[in-house]
Each structure stands twice: as C-alpha cells, then as structure tokens.
Length: 268
Image (cartoon, rainbow, N blue to C red):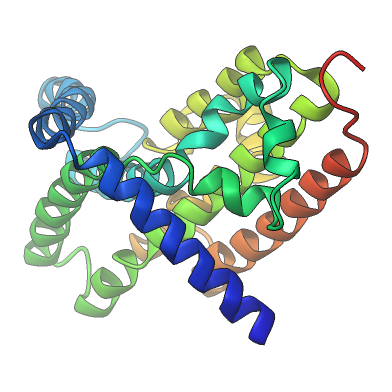
C-alpha cells in the first residue's frame, strides 16, 4: 500500500505541474474549452434535428439518446483530460522519445500520463453533462426514469472513462510492435467512441459484437441504460460497466508491460 501511496503522491505532483504549465495561457484555455464544447454540441444538435423529423432512431427518442450521448461525452472528456499523451504515443516510439521516459526512476506510464494533461477537454465533459442533465430531467418528468436510476446513470461516465482509457492504452501499446498506429486509433478509438453515443441496435450485428467484446464501449452506457429504460437486458447489466472497466484496465496494462519489456529503442 505504501508503494501505491507514493505513486499517487508522485502523480499528483507531476499532474499539478502539467496543469500549471497549461494554465499560463488562460485565454487560450478558455477558448479551447468553449470550442471543444461547441463542436461536440453540433453532433448532438444534428441528431436532435433528425429526431425532430422522424421522432425516434432505432426506437430511441431524443432524450433517451441524450442519455447515451451525455454519458459518452462526459467519459470522453474525462479520459482525454488525463490520457492526452496516449493519443500522441506514436511519436514517442517513432522519434525515440520513449527512451527519455525509461531513464526516469518511475513507471513509464506514470510519467507519460503526467507530461501533458489537457484540462481544456473538460469542456466536452461539461457539454455532455448538460445534455445528460436535460435528458434525465425530461425522462424523469415523463415517468420513463426513476430517481434511483438517474443517480446511477450519473456514475456511468466514470466507468466509461476507464473503458475508453483501457482501449486507448492497449492501442498505444501496440506501437511497441507496429510503431505507426494513427490509422489503428481511428478504428479502435475514434469510431467506437462515436458509436457509443447512439443506440447500438442501429448497427450491423458484426459491429455490435465487436463493441461488446474486443472494443467494449457498449458497457460505457448503452447496456445498463437499455435495461433502465426497459428496452431489454437484465439487472446484471447494471454491474457490467464496473466489471468490464476493471477487466479492460488489467488486460491493457498487462499488454503495455509486455510491449515495454520487449522495447529495444528506435532504430534497433
């Protein structure tokens, strides 16, 4: 426990230093937050416009989709705030910068994650929280959602962020073998994150299977919310986000350590 406590204290110190560096340019920070929030809001407004014309998508109303979109956006914002450098990990391997992490007396992943925290991404989380709050209120008022279910839904972004982080960590770890992973990130990160914002029933069976297994973003919101809205599933679905997040984090970290153990520096 002492070792874990020391690592947490070290992470806290390094993270604070990274945030202070970011906050030196306050105007740029505020503009980034507002722009990110606006860009992601446009995605949902487009869906809302379609639903205004057709009432539902795959049997889900605009407020029901708002639950999925809000939880996924909040999870994405939290994950991107603390996992920003994972998206840039290709350059660490291709340009040899990972060597500088290995000479530090601390775990490489710990140092990597504290190099460049991006609190500007919290704008995405705030925008998602606004959509989630409006949707929860509307469904609660309509009797489609209970107070207890609403409280539970607000915990989902935490587990969703953990699932997104685990997928990103595993994708980044593949750079130890592949070096270039930008195209892979589109397949494993960007597309699944977008898919998690909408009812998975609208996708082909093969894609749904993928999003429930190798890229388990279905458990970031869709699976438990589907049950809470009476659209299928069982009460066990309510614990799957926790179980999947813990399993995904374990497997992805193991994969990271495996790749790191075989790393031979750039050009080797």
